[in-house]
Amino acid sequence: MTTRLYTHPIYLEHLTPAGHPERPDRLRAIQRVLDDEPFERLDRVEAPEGDEQTILYVHPEPFVEGIRRQVPEEGMERIDGDTVLSPKSWQAALTAIGAANAAVDDVFSKKADNVFVASRPPGHHAEKTTAMGFCLFNNAAIAARYAQKKHGAERVAIVDWDVHHGNGTQDIFWDDPSVLYCSTHQMPLFPGTGAKGETGVGNIVNAPLSPDTGSDHFRDAIRSRVLPALDNFAPDLIIISAGFDAHHRDPLAEINLTEADFDWATGQLMDRAARHSSNRLVSLLEGGYDLQGLAFSVAAHVTRLMKG
Image 1 (cartoon, rainbow, N blue to C red):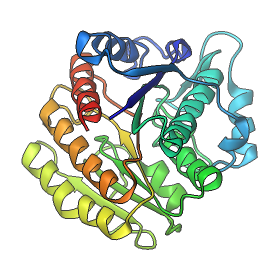
Image 2 (image 1 turned 135 degrees about the vertical axis):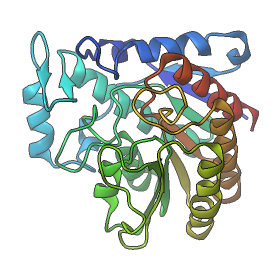
Image 3 (image 1 turned 90 degrees about the horizontal axis):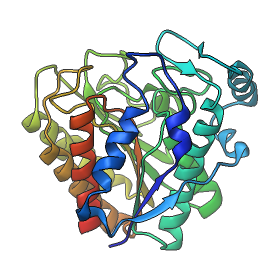
Image 4 (image 1 turned 60 degrees about the vertical axis):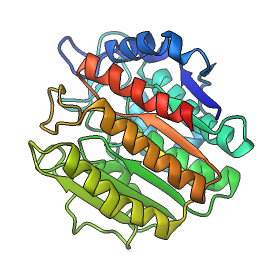
């Protein structure tokens, strides 16, 4: 089983204010843990800069140009109270998209069985015309559309286990039966979407979790809602919006998962990728804001990807 890792130094140059949870230290913590001996077999590739035209697969051009114009020459520019631009943010975001699309190329060309993309800024809160929740562009949605346009994928599944609901991904694919979106997330919590009754055209599967629940509820949600939906949909590609902020150490939520839960969930999705998608699985980093919880959870996730 070949697992590829994409990252790039530019991701460290997307700057946020002091005390902001989505900070460059997140990637430094991931890099340190993935430099350990158990990960020597990782196929490490520097992320390419993305093609700007692929952003338009998901986001309209006026919105994209609006983000570009807001990028400051120095200092920081706030899009909203949580979402910030710095001088290198455009290049970082474009390279995050480039890595996600390259990962899609890799699994379709069999250069890798699966790929983990350690990038920032994250993407799953970015709606068609709104940047929010630390996110500028929706990396997972762009990668799904890229798989359809470049590789002829008929059905793409996005599974999102970030503790916050991916309102952006849901918004983008709300009425598109060719993309399945499944999400486990804490509710109530930012951004306030993700109720079970939000089903799109039957392609949206939300499995909200109550605060202060943990492994049993999370695994039951995966078993009872996510896996049956994947089996019914039989995707050509599985994309994971891999947030690790449901870890019990995370400061922004109250779901009490451990590294073992992310290992287990990764294995379940790999089983479905083997069954339906010729092992094609791409994992894109989303949230995770306690550095130790994030690093250990990513290590468990990537270890499972490498095991096959």
